Length: 134
Image (spheres, rainbow, N blue to C red):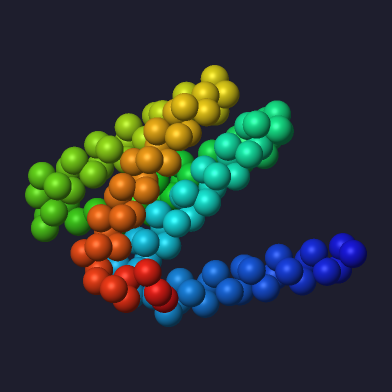
């Protein structure tokens, strides 16, 4: 049984790495949004079940995506005020997630999820019909 779980985990990791390696810059941002949304869904489930450690890990993953993926991906030179506004929004979301973790605040998780869904929808729309595919 343990061997099967290890194999499945390895497959998922290799699959994710392959999707990232083959992705366009536009698709990479979409994958970051998807990863953050997935982490928030896991955090919500762990919060509901009272699994504090797993909730913290999932929220930490979403924060890492914001801080280590989305913020550094902003082009401040070319992006102008939009880039600054996105930076500020990502920082706000990070703050809300920290509070959600500290206070077991499902509403804060839902707020960030809604913001990320809106951003992902807009990002997908500017990428055209193929944006949702790797």
